[in-house]
Length: 112
Image (tube, rainbow, N blue to C red; front, side):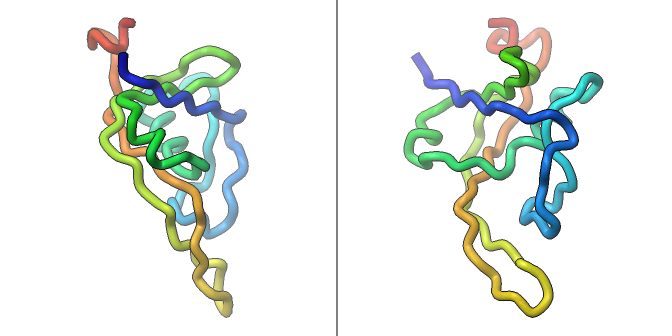
């Protein structure tokens, strides 16, 4: 049976540092976000064991013990370089990004 990566979300708008390497301004979950938006906002910034994460076939985006979006993992990327701002060095951020293809209603895996 394939492994599933469970990504636990914070309350929207979350906390994203200025000059975040993903260029996003918020993360987390709130009512009304589409599955695609949930994945885009929250696929960045995870401390993952790369080998273990690459063994997973799917990711679940979970908030409040409820699955809010599901996706097929197409890649695990990182670590990333982060610009700490003018006059500061670029440093390596050990966070990873999960590249995904969002699943939706009607897909066999989604319905499971």
